[in-house]
Length: 355
Image 1 (cartoon, one colour):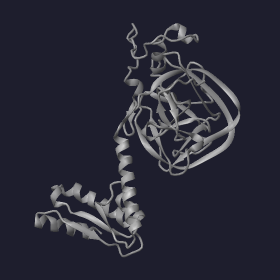
Image 2 (cartoon, helix red, strand yellow; image 1 turned 180 degrees about the horizontal axis):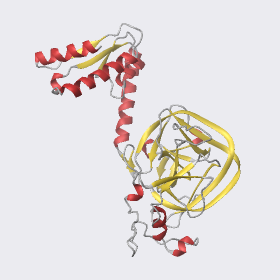
Image 3 (spheres, one colour; image 1 turned 180 degrees about the vertical axis):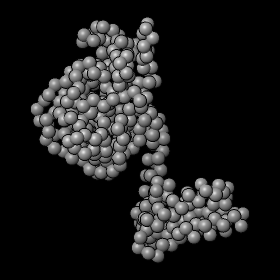
Image 4 (tube, helix red, strand yellow; image 1 turned 60 degrees about the vertical axis):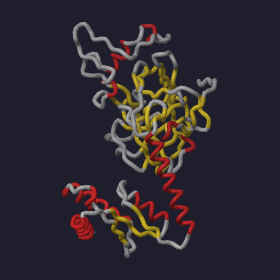
């Protein structure tokens, strides 16, 4: 394979014109050779710094639409193209439909939806926990992805679509259980989960092959492929939190140490992200009454102790994951706030009350 790539590049350089190289793999293995081809091309380009016209385009011969899609997505970049060699017209139509669907997905991910794009940033808003109540048993959903997540990453879920909480993946080690960085213990079946295109779905609807949006503590999001969904009966806990506008947001989660909500961290021993948030709300808001607006600014203390700025609240060094087993009234967690009701997962404008 290496010799093929090198020979093709040398030929293009000598002819001073870009060439199309068609490869027909005569052995059974298809994916691994394609991945090796893509890797070699990228490595050679990086090392040689050749002009674009000196780099040949590689096409691979395939016999089915499924094989074509594998070639075009090998190592994410894919080969430059495919030659579909088949007597079946349905295979050609199948490939066209798949490529159109893939292009639509790429386009949708690049479009602005609400507070952010599918591959962009969401505005995460800190809210103060006002209630933590153990409940009885319910059917909770573990969402296992086909990719790994890092600490600080998870899924946005909530009992109300207008306020969704960031639940961290099981990516942290503990002395009692190994980490499962592919999993989010996302809560019971009735809850909403944030999906591509600004949509929502019920956790009960998720299945293998679906896409959800993975979000980190800074609000950066990316699509994640669902590999498996586990529904089991487990003890639950109710969490309610109040925003700066006095609105109450709610979710339920499995009552377990490994289930964690992400929120701003306390910085040192001085006024950190947690206390800075509380200081921006009126005393009455801490007593259970409606808060006064003003969560977008933080005033410095007179003794010049450091505080988190609004930007620092979303900084990766300024977050913490709080286990629901340790969560208490007054703790601060992140939510993604949206307006409008939902119909089949789409945001619509209509009167609605959720409680």
